[in-house]
Image (cartoon, rainbow, N blue to C red):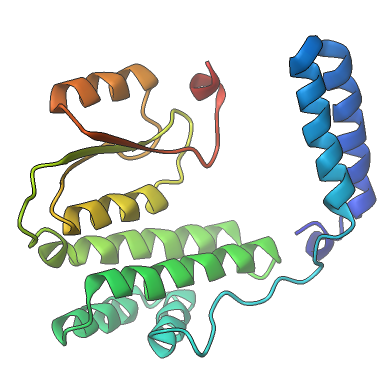
Amino acid sequence: MLGKRNIPVEDLARHLELTRTVLGEMLAGDTGALAVEYVSAGLAQLQSFPVDLPTCLHEDAPHAGMAFEYLDALRKGERHVASKLVLDAAANGTPVRELYLHVFQAAQYEVGRLWQTNQMTVAEEHYCTAATQLIMSQLYPYVFASEKTGGTLVATCVAGDLHEIGIRMVTDFFEMDGWNTYYLGASTPAQAVVDTVVQQQAQVLAISATNLGPPARR
């Protein structure tokens, strides 16, 4: 990611060295030692990181053709084309689980790679992700068709984390397996999550923590 933005890897190495020094000075005992160990491990691996990341869309993967077409439509701003592609596949018998794993997930991985390698802007990434969330919701007649088994799942992102598409997909898989799901979405305060688990008498709490903001750390 740094190389594609013309930022020398040495800059990151220097920042990590300074971070390690400060952590060692500011954190006492085992806590400081553990923090320094983690940063040192990162520094040791830094030079071995690949410069180029291979594509996440593979021609031999299940539904590869659909995944390529889907992402191509989104990159052209043709959300309606991407939607029709997926909805037609579902109507013709393609299992929703396969659409989630081999089209949505694969496309999102590739979106992340394109952004990381400076081949896609933040705005384009947001568009693709929002479009996929919309199309996922269009599949809900299939998602909610499963017979209920009685289990209850509460799913959420921690406070400060806005990256919700992954945990939403996990929630939908539980729903398709017959669970009652209570999806709270992005950036939910910790106490609200606890209260919901109690109120819903949930057997499972699923938490996404892509980013930990100050409220979550507290």
